[in-house]
Length: 310
Image (cartoon, rainbow, N blue to C red; front, side, top):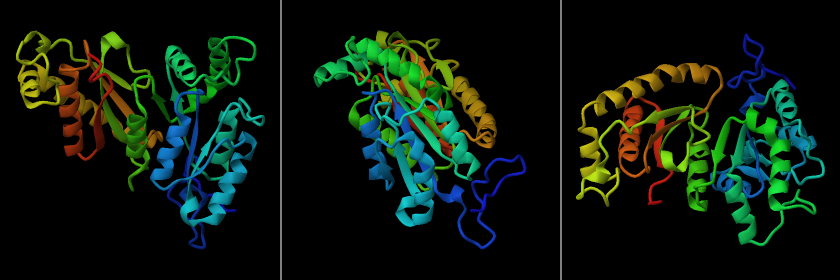
């Protein structure tokens, strides 16, 4: 099969073969992996919802064969997702090598890695009274530790990492549908994520913004019970000295870097905006920043990790 490449030797994701037939890069491949209990099955169902042909528990050794079949089949199979499970007997730790092999054949797979805090994973396994597939005679924590070791390199190679510690099933589904559902799925997509510092930093953040320099609406009695998505709180936060310059500066920064990220093949950018609890300031700033980015032509959306936790 012909293989179209850019001047730098990488597969050309927009090329066609000399005969006018689509090249392998026109086949949209998504590789889903991650920690057991992290949400792989939810991701798989969400991808099916947006039109992907999903192959679950695929042995890693068959990734290239599956990609070739999807290319030859055409039609709906041109959007294929392959879900890799460490429990598969054919699983290998060399996922990076398998991805490189796909690239050498002209494919351009996107790797999604689902993760969660150990404590959250343990609670999920205990809630369904299941043992971890790798714990053997040990504890749940032992199985999780082994799996993290096996998947460490895969996590480093992922295009997008989704921490599901604070996401419910519907929130995770919406995240996947936003990332992969649109016709412009190949464009850089920006998620502006509000969070509370007291709940920890989002591990998948590319930029972290700190909105705690602004006065906290929590200390305004009539605003305390409201959120940054409501007009009264938003007006209060955005009306503070320095707030507009703060949003404008970071909007300019994101706009200045997106072209470079796209040239480097990055498709997902997470801008995390934090305040103390993730209810007032960070939410208002995240909504405003996402709105300004959309008006500048970027595919941007606001999400709120910790809203409702207080």
